[in-house]
Length: 638
Ligand code: GLU
Image 1 (tube, rainbow, N blue to C red):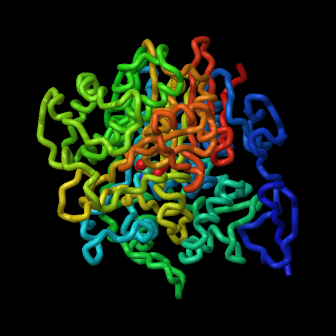
Image 2: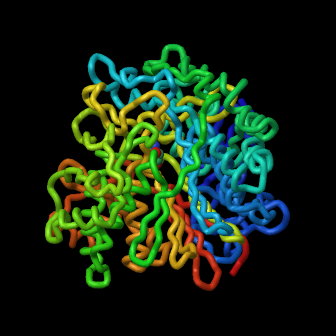
């Protein structure tokens, strides 16, 4: 019997597995990517490879790099390298973002890919303006809210996750095409070159990939196409160090490269998506109930990305640009910052700053939950929510001396609208029972931050929703489908109005919060994170850490996180590492109660950021530890 080589995940020890059979996806084992801090291959300081082929000898993974020219930070070495490669060849930040995201579609397929969607925030240095590209997944035209209810109650969340019903029409390919066409210098074919090669020739499975497969084991075993791609012949995840190839994805990317976005939204790929949604490829005899969905060819053919203005607010000396609806991210971050602006951090201890951060976030989430939804279906009172007067009227609801013990009620932003208008969905409140969207968001989604030498910046969050999306690989095409429609709210009464209720053709409300911070007209910071609704609190905590507490950006990213999202009992989530800090003790003295996020997945977010310095240098930062660390690089050493 042939022997298959395994590397034990934690210690990189080579062992032989006599019970395993070979597969076309297995090649001889290459060295495991070094963990951050490990001695790795070819250390080179800033992490830039040399020579024409940056992928020929992989550089050491570093979570922080400072230098000149462009910069990139992603969750994965090859994603970052693909961006730097494009920048070095003269591409701009938009080209590099598409290149990085498409590589991540191969190397980080459980977080993002062409089966999903995202929000891209772009700073155009030449015009001095920020634009956004919404390529959020969309409910098919034939989907009604009642499809998510059975016997008078919402279908249980885990069953909605692994279903055809929750698949939104994927937006990523239209998003990439729109970004390149409007703001890039490359065509889709050139931007996808490296991703095609990575998918075809493979990459070594790292600990994140291995663990993410493991957490999807039960459903991958139940879905024939997912089992064939992501599990070995023994039905187990491919071990760390295995060379993983995805020839089907390479072929799909090649189709897009040759024929453009139409090759995704019409023809064989579209037909395969429709078939996988309407008739999920369930393993015979599987005990898992995987309900079919209703996506039709016309849903794919008609999908459009939307170019929308950014949500912009000021915070102290800074201008903050964020993502607008259908993401609640930019508005909720702005709401909380407007509340925090009334406090002077120089007069406060770190505990007092964090207490106010939690209080502001609680109030902002009360409004988010009550008023925000897809702007093409809901007239949300955005101007009122963003008005400084509204924040002034709400700020006193933050009790400075004690933690809350219950959820906050939403305010009345309509009174602060410059052009007051009724909201069909607004004001109904999202806390009226029923099933809410997935708010845990521990390991899904990914954020990419990239800048180029001309000063353009891309802050891009992309996702397939849950880690592993809906669990279904599109047969013959090598990518997972999203389950983004689980981000809709399901009120107990399906006919009750709700700004984020399911409607045909609607985009579910998101929390994704790609952010760009300017000062005196110049970029200062770009950042964001995955993490479901904790994205908003992570972005807020990073901004408070860097602006109010004066932390260097790498320290702000590494700091343990806490997250307050207007829980019914007033409690917050905390990473385990936070619970033993002096700040935790100080907050506990004010009555704060924390749930240990360590018991439900451990980490809050996996952010990336760029910090632009006055001397023209830039620091790129990825997580040093979360998701086993990310990769930051700059185009040129300082
Ligand atoms: N579905 C999530 C959202 O749009 C994706 C983000 C995440 O879970 O990290 O908010």
